[in-house]
Length: 443
Image (cartoon, rainbow, N blue to C red; front, top):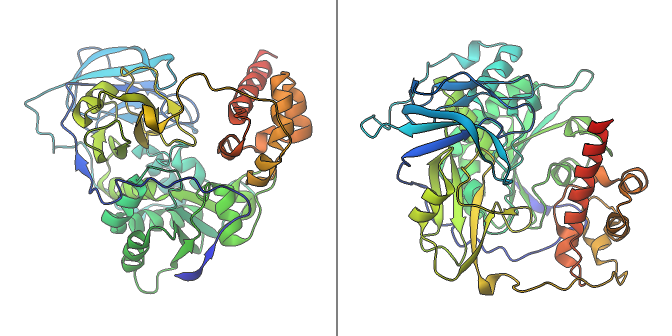
């Protein structure tokens, strides 16, 4: 392990609030019905391959990938397809989904799958096999993992970076996965090394997680081209661009990809699932999430089936009477949950339930920018959030993109966090990007 605490420039230090760090992963009770959204990832939605009243087995493919930048969906429970219809997604929009009513008499441990010889697969076959598992980035971005493993033509990957930073406050899923499933992570790293052709891997963990660092160091086989690197505890240390700077001292160019810096980056939970599922020939049907915050009675880290309704999850965890807000994800990059009728997805990292005294209540007064430059000092990609925010308020979206590099913004929220005028900067940037995408599509 590297003894020095490497890091990047700028960023912020929000309170960690990792109250569930010592809570071992446990499984929640099975829901009576699951809702499997066909778009739980970046890219084209999956296409349903089942129909209403069809019997399905846990782990069986129920939707095929809609293209290369897409993944299939697998049945999280054994039961009967009750509908193939529209359902609410985490953004509050109606989206195509498959509803499955669970068979209470089915063996919950029985999972569909056929073991495969991973070592006998070529790089191309390996990437296709990864796609078949349905695994996407479980750190929240939900980008299809096999697409990351497909090295762009003319590029070369010399380092696989394994992201175990989990810099978002409150969340502890990655930490528990490293402590409890280190061997699975190593198996997933071996798959990533073979698929990308990279000669080495570096496991990056913030130095506020000594137990995770120790667990990963113990799990690395002697002589393996895998090292563990301790990084400074800072937000957003786990962002790909920040990891490239901190570990490799390379900058991902504006508008570029990690592969432009010779790097492929994967979340630890993603590789743990891959290390388990690929040799077993199974698909992604469950994940670990953190349920925490002062508004929940039983905080912890829970293994739960994808598609479990949020209402079922919250009934199990227990919502306190003074709970005021539920956030899907962490406080820095997560979004408020508008309805308890949305299902858990592959990108759900946690559910944060906050009380009145944990959030700002009432109407939040937004004041004019005082040009204090705190947002400039905090921005980890060296943008000018103040100027971007002023343009955003005037709906000058093209100027934001062309003159102030809007698309380099990683939406980490550092600027909003430090702004003394309470200007919702990152929200302006998200609106600007959405409007530009809409205008581009209309053309």
